[in-house]
Length: 489
Picture 1 (spheres, rainbow, N blue to C red):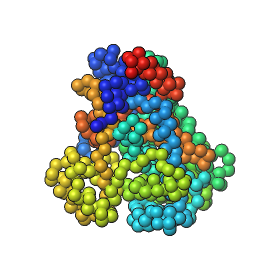
Picture 2 (picture 1 turned 90 degrees about the vertical axis):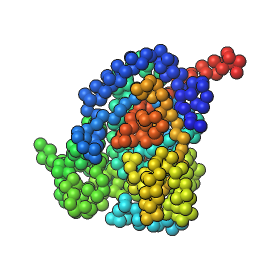
Picture 3 (picture 1 turned 135 degrees about the horizontal axis):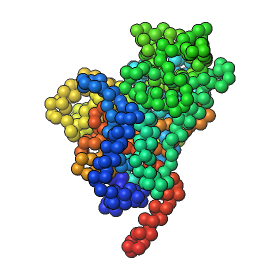
Picture 4 (picture 1 turned 30 degrees about the horizontal axis):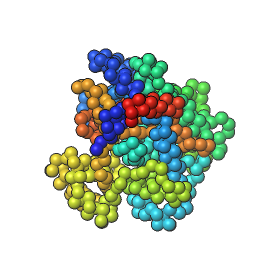
């Protein structure tokens, strides 16, 4: 049975959603449609777009925005935050180990072939020390929910996770459209994320930094699908947005070109993939990177966030071992569960998957954005058979998972308010000093009835994510208890 986050599995509204239910009950659909148009106009004015280059025509698109927020109470968020911090700590320890002593491999906990055959593994990072031992400074952890206290981690994003600008702008737009709603509810803020990101980047200044670190954000440029986010974050942090051509390396030191001449750069928040960072060290044809950047990095003269090679931890085959990582490195029981997963590289698992393809979700180990996957229950027979041949030919390229009954949230669609499936991407910041997590994240919603695919490139939308302050949670819980007592429950 599907868990509805507003109504649970019954007819009564859950306490955290009481205000939202009252608001929806008294708000006419015509008013909501007008607000929907206002929201679209605001997003167009601000320029919040993403790019799709595979469908022809104008690649710039607006991500559909849903007016009805997703609500988590304080206790739910505390559980998530504790589990996220634990998980990202273990992932950082794993990446450090992979490029260092390899204790987890020598212990037989993680197979060495998963490292050696991992496209994100960078041999040149072996033995390279990074400030604070932090490799994944910014992580986006994709979560799904199937019950009141049942949250699962769906995927770890440890390279250059995107989407935080939508989290911030969704909140800003909601506050503009519905100020009275915010005035009646104690919602934890997310607007301090840029300050937290700045503090995180400052904490990992390189050992040879001569003073207060100079930080820049390195973008591939205007034609990148996430360019809006790059410019938005640079502006919010008050740092320079640079492209590869704006940087130069002299004597192992990275400088950016300014109107006053060259200025040293100490920390680079890079939104460029490893292969394109430095044509002297990686892809020699890259016109996006900076010649000599990796040498400066190895010398300890600049910090790259996220670290080169950090993507080794977000491979979907590696994902299956994260609970073991938590036990191995932290000596703790995992707070957040993985989705049960079959490793198609293993003979028994492959046999099961081939026999139950029409029941499972099969994902490419290196896939992203909802591409390269099969959703068995919704796939045509011909598509299932074609995927079966792919699995037989290259089983190590895939993992499989059950089709979870993802939770739904009330969503404003053409027919009115209806439940739609959602996921959640919280953003975890790891510095040399502490782990920082703003209360909330990017909720993505599958706008098509019955669809489980929430990715914006395939028709999904986004919602504002509210985390109630503890006092609000207590107030609504007490109100619900009083109401139950008055009804003789």
